[in-house]
Image (spheres, helix red, strand yellow):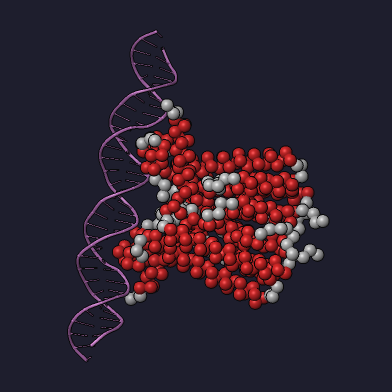
Length: 204
Length: 204
DNA sequence: TGTACATCAGTGAACGCGCGTTCACTGATGTAC
DNA sequence: TGTACATCAGTGAACGCGCGTTCACTGATGTAC
């Protein structure tokens, strides 16, 4: 009944949930195939081995997240022409989105892989690296536009600022999990937004 | 020759390195005892099971880190009486410290456990929670002192600000690992410092 | 000071179970002529 | 339109290995009388 690519996506869905809940290593192929209602050999038809699953998981996750960020950027661009306001709206929308996303926020898969990296193949390592560099590039462009229009009130590197978006998200997710306070990440994003405001915004 | 507590600490040292390198699950008791030059049964004399090792690892790590933070706080207190300056110096010292600590920074063990938590017993979970709450309490006190003396230039919660220190450290470590840029974390701390300055410091 | 017993810090061998992976095979669908 | 072959999306059984854990035992040190 189900086509091959359906099964493959079902495997990825189930695997993602499990990996976010308890880590890649603790997620067995056995439990994935039980959830997807296929046999273990069915799994190996779709993925050469467990590393290939990890790679696919990261790549798909990054793609989803990129689309999500693109959407937020488009929405904030539609609301203003000012590059600084665009960032501030973007961060506000991001915080709202994270607040309404109690479990399984984006970012986790990458962080989760980062903390087990010796375990993984170079391909997985590389996928992770691409993901983080992609975030840096995206946010750097946003901040560079703001910097061109507004003088910084403190001399900081735009690249570092770009990384701070990812760092605050990732760190927020770690804290949110450790404390079981799902909205902690959103509040951290709003603090970052406050920083951006103080850093760029002309003083009254 | 070696006393019991020496062996125990040797086990913890070796386990910590391995856990930071590849995660708790991927670290086998076998490899730990090989490094510590004892037999597997020797390990089980010191730790009832693998969960108990995780607990001990977190607790010891938190203790070390608390002492480290206490040291930085004492040094910055010695340099100034002003509560805001104290925070700024503290963050500067922290950044310097992280810069000179290429591998195995503090914070990792907790984050690493956070991302595999379903795997662990409640005791491990609780140890992690205590750790994060301890950080919040420490930094909240520092920021509360500053707030009492300086008006905030943007209305933010002191508790969130306190969490931001931990979040930026944890997030920075994730990014640093993902990109293999060890000094990324230190630079993120300095950005946080810039935020604190802009948020509290009277404008000229 | 000597003896008896207890505790400490382990050893060595064995266990069973779960896991990732392989392999030969299969029924349904697609394609060529 | 029918037949032959190929590909797709799996099944089912078996594998071997590594892992966490257990258990009976041991030599060295500490303590009581």
